[in-house]
Length: 285
Ligand SMILES: [Zn+2]
Picture 1 (tube, rainbow, N blue to C red):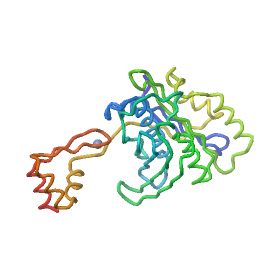
Picture 2 (picture 1 turned 180 degrees about the horizontal axis):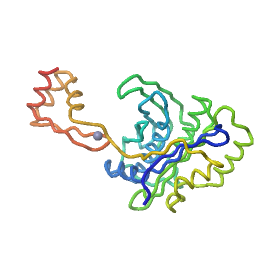
Picture 3 (picture 1 turned 90 degrees about the horizontal axis):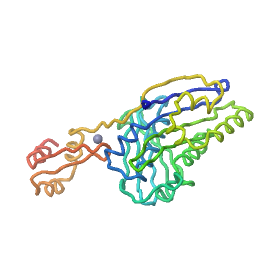
Picture 4 (picture 1 turned 45 degrees about the horizontal axis):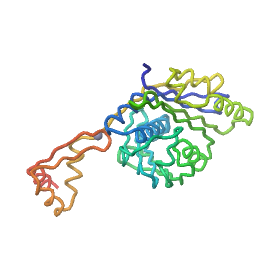
């Protein structure tokens, strides 16, 4: 089994950029931690994979968040990736019924907005871009986002292989036309992407990232290569801080129980606060 990894490359005299990623293990880990059903597993896998590719090589920022908010049964899908390849993701409704027919998530996502947030540091200054989701599919709507927000024509592929046991392979690619790309080169790359077809089936069959890259670009030059993984940065102190900022009346209400348990939406970690802990927090704030 291949390890999860990401490769960035340039081709065509540096005028076309590609990012390829294998995210099988992290997609499985995210699904497992949220006890997600098939539809939510696919949505989480695609959002996490896309966030990793968007964050990689982002200069001047530390992390990127992708928020997909439609009016469908999944509710909000949210993935946060650091520029060094660590990602976490969550979804409002991890147990949505059904199966993504032919990979389509649109009936589960619905109409809404796709938001991209980039922050310089964790919790620091944030830059935000928003597009309406015309396709209600994460890959197509990201293409739309790059064209609209940065005037960068971008082909986005997000694929996975779903078995009754869950996701058995996952990954994605970005191919981006930079200023100076010629029409002839773009046509050639478009034909290559068309020829590739469904990404999930190739990943399931064992296609390596190098093979995928060589399928997408002629003579790619690798710029960077690094592992990617699931990771959550939550801790007890963060929840204590959030609780301490609640109005006194809310804290009083919480103290009616002998203890309360907070649960991280991303990794499922639970933190227990006793009545005495809550009293201590109030005194501290
Ligand atoms: Zn967590």
